[in-house]
Length: 188
View 1: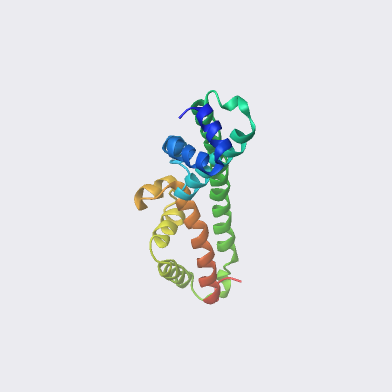
View 2: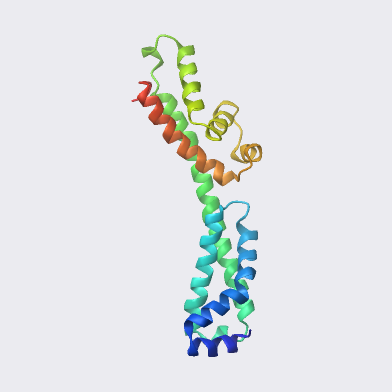
């Protein structure tokens, strides 16, 4: 379907025009977005970017005549640009989260007052027990991250996740671990 045909359909029925755009170009846009974001984004990130592309298409196509002549090129360019912007956002967030996770673990360790505990080995035993209570894959991820000092990318390979998913799991698991340790009277 050409841009002129879509423009005529838009004037007759905007809903039908939007359906036809999705039908005609949905897979094309999804392929572009997926290929750009698969290394750093979750499925939700990819779907959100896909929706953002079509939102922009619907808004701009309706009001701007210059996109009518080369609709496929316009849609491809818009999809690539949106996906690249999302990639940059996710990559920056991943770097920030990785740094924040390390700071949080350092803070968690600094919250532990070893002087108040009778034995340091008892502290390690409790800490390991609380990590195991988190369940899989959180316990494995935390052990690999903080005991074996593996990167999120290395951990991702062993637990069949993306690096960004691993970083998200670390953040959530650290919050759960902090609560468990507070309940055990180890942290403030």
